[in-house]
Length: 167
Image (cartoon, one colour):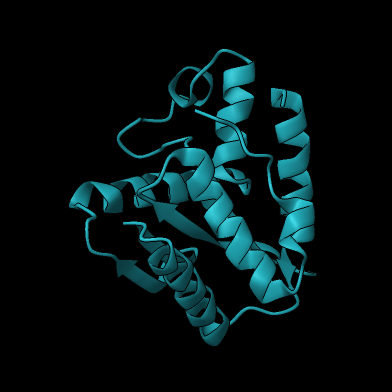
């Protein structure tokens, strides 16, 4: 699959995966769903769900390190800044052969354009937060969040998932 195809599908994911409403209970359900998916697969990840400026769910599974928490923070900062998934921003920069530092003067200590943070959007309100995972390869981090969002919002993950790419 080509970069432009991934970017087009991620834009569709971002457009389609919007909540009718989002509150602390919804955040908890999303966090629990992400945690369950990771546990079922034996994945060591950190999960973070937040409204901007307000953490609502956080879980660090066995096998993670404090570094995973830092990746969550940095990827979440990208969503807060651009209201796009961190993976989409990373792929756009890759396409342009640029970095966050070169293009936007953003510090790598505070921003990471790697997959795993996805905008939490509400119909009629826009992007209000993020759901972030760290611990897997970036495409898998991204897809874990998309799968959990599909589950909660009632969308068919099979129609929105990115194609499998061997690494």
